[in-house]
Amino acid sequence: MMKTINRNLITGLLLIFASVALAQTSKKEIFGDIYRTGSNYFAYPGPKAKALTKAPEGYTPFYISHYGRHGSRYMSNNEYYVTAINKLDSAQQMGILTKLGEDVLAKLRIGYADAWHRDGDLSKLGAQQHHDIAHRMYERFQELLSQPLCIDAKASTSRRVMLSMFNFCQELQRLNPALEILMDASKHDFRYVVEDLSIQPAATSQNEAYEQLRSEIFEGAHNPTRLMASLFTDVRKAEAFVSGRDLMEALYNVAEDLQNVPELNISLIEVFTKQELFDMWQGYNAGWLLNTGLVPGSTPYYLQQKEVLDSIVSTADKVILAGKPTATLRFSHDSSVLPLTYLLGLKEAMGGVTDIKNLYKYISIDKIIPMAANIQIIFYHKADSDDILVKFLLNENETSVPALKTDVAPYYHWKDVRTYLTRQF
Image 1 (cartoon, rainbow, N blue to C red):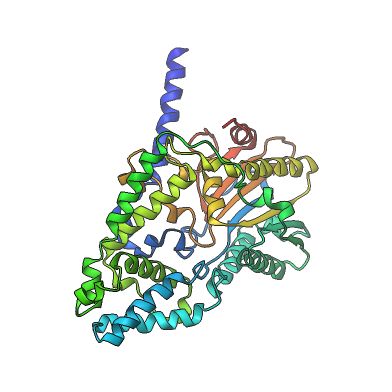
Image 2: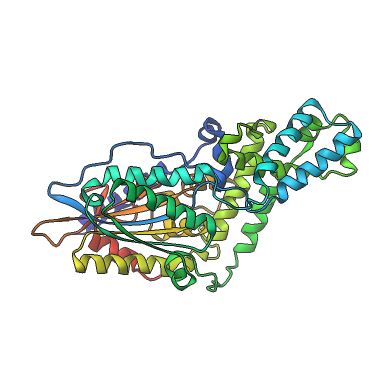
């Protein structure tokens, strides 16, 4: 008996370690797609595989629980544009801009003219992303979504989130005019849609030390020596009125966000070396993971999303009890998707380590919360059976829950999933 228990324990641990290992990120991988260094600025890449694993024989989808981030957007505010343009403009007046500096300033002016009064707005690409995600959802689960369903859709009151919901639902409605989609965006429903910021978990003793390490990584990455020499013919004169560190941060943010407005046909990513982008990305990545509580011993801010998780479970219970096919669509933000991914136990958010310098190898937020990030939980039933199966998709890719065993991977038995999701934190 003891040998059997030990064998099962070892097998379970190996499955967990294997699943977590699949989520690891290498420097070579980031260098291969340098726009991933944008972290939460990263434009939605789309699913890796077109086809999904077929459900076990006799099982058909009857419910989709979807939770998504708004699509590609402009920067939350134009402060970075203003900082960079003001400094480079002054240098231009003094005649100390290099040819590259002149080119950067010209591109900044184009980008700023387009972004003016569009702080945080959904971009054209962001709208298209949600049309595309909805289209693929319909094609993948047409057996369910081609029916005359009543679908509940809710969004936060952010304009970009509401427009993302509208574009998503518009595409579903186009594909199936018989759908009755009820859209709403109200503070009344916030507890089902966004994290509850009134919940403030007690800070842990390790958190301050972690934050110090993160800050060292972040600030160390902002070494502007090479960048300043590339932009100014007289660096000493420029340093009299330009903070190289602040200029570097401003240009990084603009350069990364420009991938979300591709119609401008301009790029500033080449202003940096791949190593510089990689170093800055590490700091942002660690900051997100610490601020969510995904580092062992850090403050568990993911608990702010617990009520959303509970709502997902209770809504699924009601749908199963009613036995009526439907879908629930929720639209929110990156700060909501990341903690939910962790609470659901998805492999991409698991395996955080205390080694802040190497944290990126284990959890990489560009894999979890790019623009238009989404989690889809698909429920399946079978005639004459009470067994409900579920499958998890993260950014439309099949994923796993390392903490759970299953005999029908990548599907799980809902009874096991439900027990796991209602565990005490």
